[in-house]
Length: 580
Image (cartoon, rainbow, N blue to C red; front, side, top):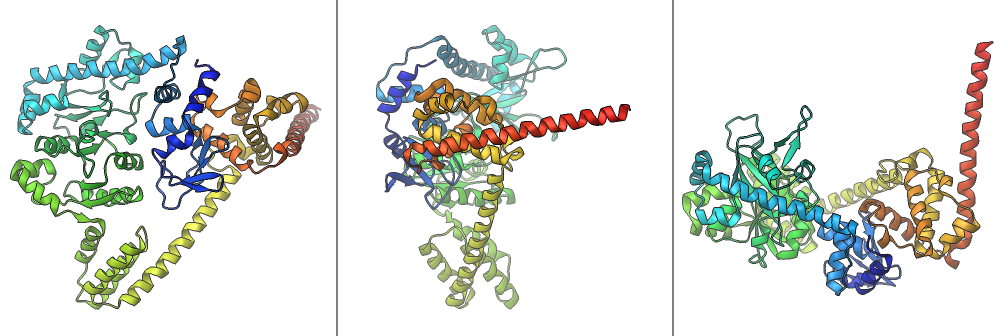
């Protein structure tokens, strides 16, 4: 394990403000710094960096931690890998011990295994007539196939498994990398990808981290695409297909497609700024990832109803992270790949220049539904457009678009704006009501996945939270709680808080959340930070409050034990009476 001294030095040399500032625009707010949270979409800053404790916490989504936790979240790294990244950033060498080597090898083994699997699939493509016919039909040149590492998974239950075994990989490694599954009947490995054109997914460092597989079967019951599930090296919600190439040519604009073939076709036509999500609906994490590499985006989805409906969701996600976005509507073809095949790259470039803003896209869709020469339909169209403008727009956008609507529908601008204002007020009240309800339920412990025991005994859990919050803020009080107050793990009623206190007593006054990232999940770390943030306003190091909370917890624990003893005694008496 990496020593506490080295972890402390890594944190010291990587100032949390400096590291977070590379991802978040921070502004001074008293002794702390605030900004828009990089882990969820928001317009009002709720992300706070506490300079005194070198920690961060978002009051919107609950994400919290230290500089190590932040790097883990933003870069999708394990605890040890985040430490290594920060050590490299600050010129610190980490001595390799046995555990670190095993963890490093685990990731490296999966990446190495993916590389060997990609080579195997690529060779199989050359030997399969059916696969060759498919890539020829899709007009994939030899250069493109090689560039993207396109391959073919044979229609065989053990082809890849046998190959990987011959390379020395174990069943567990194949399963963990989502390349093979293990049969419950005979315990043998069998291939997950079979009879599929294979698309390697490569991260920005050039490592093959996952695969997408498109079936060649005509069986409608079979999934058209199978994609790698989350593994130690891959999270499909936080990666984009072809970003490893697009990042070099997308500083001004990125083209977001729905599928692998669309991206490959666009790259082949010279549009090397195209990317696609990796077998999942577009996510906020992917929107934030795009924001790191580009200033604007063009959504290039299929022309069918589903594609256009998805585009509207993507518009919202991109807008929330501050990316200007437009929609390209593919004409006379079902997708970009087919369009380029029919009309060529120059025609597609002209199509790009005719991309529409989100409002124009929604405006056209709404107007097309109604006959605006009919009074009733005109009222319905105006109502739907006022609903649209009552959410998710800046004041300037709302003013410009309101004028456009009023002119097109030939209605009063003032009355239309009044409708928007009324609906905005209604939305705001509903949102506040939802937030209040959510806070109340959270306080009572409903839906608490980090500490599910909280709901059983809210009073004791509240005392525990206060104790741990004070100790996390003032670690010098940990020996006092353990020795002078004689607080033990057994005094805690919730399993999660019991685990936290045990770790605190092990570390004593050297406790730091940066030392426990290998033992607790990011959600659990966030809860510890939340408890600490709630107690940072205490004076005199909170010693008096700590003592009071410990006394309260022990009293509640004693009552709980007495109630249990009374219940057992009552049961015994009932049994005796029944025997008589």
